[in-house]
Length: 351
Ligand code: CUA
Image (cartoon, rainbow, N blue to C red; front, side, top):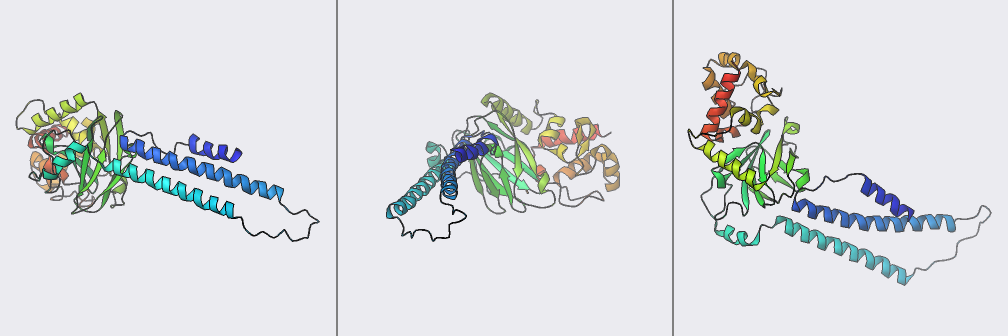
């Protein structure tokens, strides 16, 4: 009893796992607790038998006799073979069921998915599905040293450095990498998936909680690996619809209501690496953007042209003192109107 209580306290009082924020994570937590409960029971039993044996069967100081001969106990042997076999079988069945459930898309759609051979959109791999764009919602995830880019093929390839998801909607992430192997992980969503160059890997998530959760790269992918972080925002379906709408407007040239330069600067994660006073950004990985005019001069280009080139083709000119290939080139696929807004914002803010 005592050992069971002790082990249970260690399991319960320390928050080993984050609070699940997706259906998949809830299932994973169920498996975790299923196995943990079995382990606690076995630990308590074994510890109790050991302590009892030590106390009850120990040799007295003056006792030099041999112990009584023991020849095994068929009944006991059958029990300690059968019970663990049953437990291990139970664990494997529960795990297999959860694994299958966690990879499954809503059933009606997986049938149509087979024939949804639409024109590929993002880097020739990630494909949207026909029919209702929210069943499931397909998000193309691109990993590149050292940033994540999320694109929504069903919504005019709206792109964002933050993963925006509507709550209670099953989403299929289609992951790819532009350079080396990265790994996509949101602890609260439970599952992890590698982004491998030349491959399209998939991950299913059904968010169940509103809020913002960290997106973390969990594959050592280079110097900036520790900085390869982003955020995932789970919003109400109304807010998500409003966002996709604003992205569509932003995507068509000249449309009003495009996201502001500052919003783009933050949502694309520029503030993570650059210092830029108008946005309150204090990153030090890349050059200080308050000094853009001086940088442009060194590069020998007019300011606006320099800013645009630095976003779209970051390695065309690299400020001395900063390594090449750190700034992701994924921003080249920003919709034109957003790119314009961002260039304008940086141009005006750095003057
Ligand atoms: Cu990307 Cu570590």
